[in-house]
Image (cartoon, rainbow, N blue to C red; front, side, top):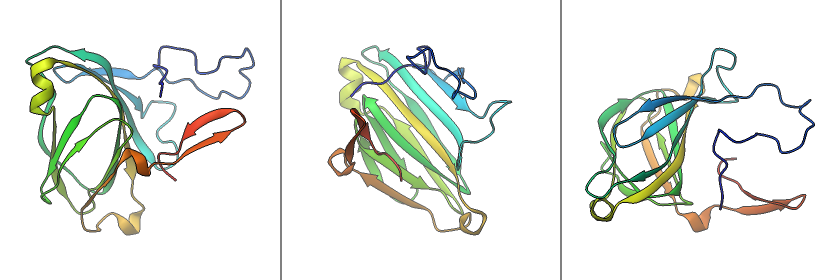
Length: 174
């Protein structure tokens, strides 16, 4: 699987008439590496139900270090985490303790409230590693904003791959 960083062209052809807006994203340092927030922007608040779109990395994390996003709350939304490289250990107030690996999806519905942390697993801290992934933040419909919190992990082998017009695609959501 490959991923084109935001710095590369969105469209390979010279026909750009269908491109409405190119979003470069703004970088935020979270310690071990940067996260680029692609949404929202001044010109594009949402795309469908997605209110935030973050790209983590790509980055090389040195041995002895890692990502430590301490416990923090979420309400009235859902997050979807997908990795191209690396691993993240997700723990939450529901008792979930799940390592997300490349190709898998973690779907966390905050609803009326959840607290979670995201950290680098201990084994990866020793050797160093590459990290690259995305996190989508989903605006829940108004009538579902106060649902009970839920966490669902979808292993990589459960995510469908399809081919359309000669392109290999991975259907993450929908």
